[in-house]
Length: 120
Image 1 (cartoon, rainbow, N blue to C red):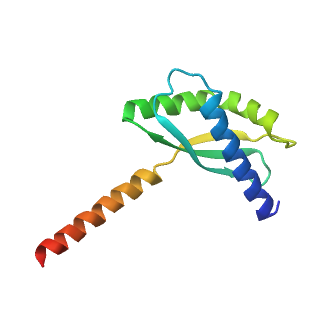
Image 2: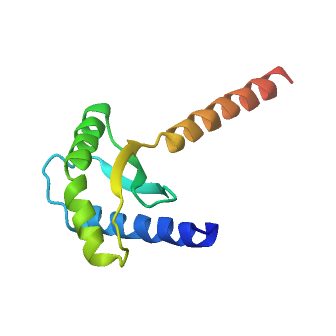
């Protein structure tokens, strides 16, 4: 599969999964704000890693992640209706902490800059 095709599939799946999570899942455990940050489909289209970023406290993040993992079959079925692929990949949902890590690094850099300004 060419890189161009896999990139298109990744982006299309990311868009559709985001729409499904936002509008079709009615699980009461969804308490944290959820956004799909990245989707990586294997070359043979058998698996897709879905990286989600969750905003909220730790308890709500855990509940929302568990609800997402439990509803992966529903999401996969809905993808089958919305995307024209011969095989719809099995979804592996993982938590993406890159936004939080970026905020932490930004905070550290801000503190270093303040410390340097106070020394001068």
